[in-house]
Length: 103
Image 1 (spheres, rainbow, N blue to C red):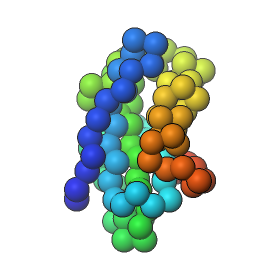
Image 2 (cartoon, rainbow, N blue to C red; image 1 turned 180 degrees about the vertical axis):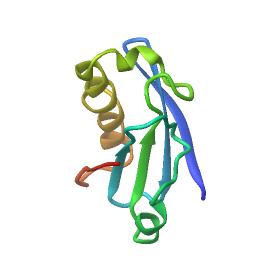
Image 3 (cartoon, rainbow, N blue to C red; image 1 turned 120 degrees about the vertical axis):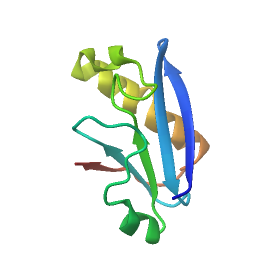
Image 4 (cartoon, rainbow, N blue to C red; image 1 turned 135 degrees about the vertical axis):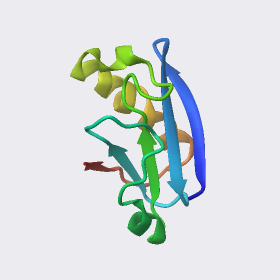
């Protein structure tokens, strides 16, 4: 499965991510277990239906800084408010809704 891999920084902390699929409606996948941005569980159907699946590596996994996971408010700010969604909203996914899938 083709992927765009990248990293960005929020308050000096690194977040690694992948985007799989076309630049259609974005789906942000936040895994609850030990995982990185290389996971692809259940992505086939989403990609076949032209969704863009965004997956950040969890705090402390891959190249994502472990400090991001020190509190829920820090993680939310890094992944959503100041980080992952705000960056793509401007660059890749303007005028699309965000769908969050918890696995």
